[in-house]
Image (cartoon, rainbow, N blue to C red; front, top):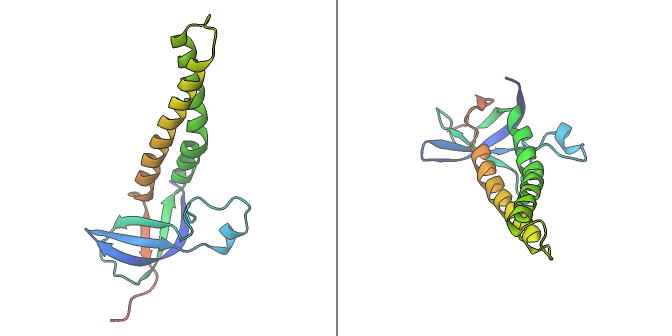
Length: 144
């Protein structure tokens, strides 16, 4: 399985998990469409949770994130809302009756499909941020 490798810093240890703040690499910051692995929607850097192992807070690590997670995330954020919007509109069309005098069923079905897609996208992206298949390697030791 191919992995996208980034450098990060362990910023928190809690509940058997280490939170790693991913640092944006030069390669990713030069693209117009930035890397989904090291950018978040918030203004702060992206953070991922990994099993703690023997990591300590403050350590610099290399994290390999499965390549499929960025593809899946892109599909969930961009593709799923469009697909569910169209599916909802078609369902509204069938439920209203094709001979209806107005398009309210189509509009409401499309909006309901879009709302469902937004909730699914939020849940899937939270699951993807807890990268279970990540490969974490320590780059330096924290001085005690």
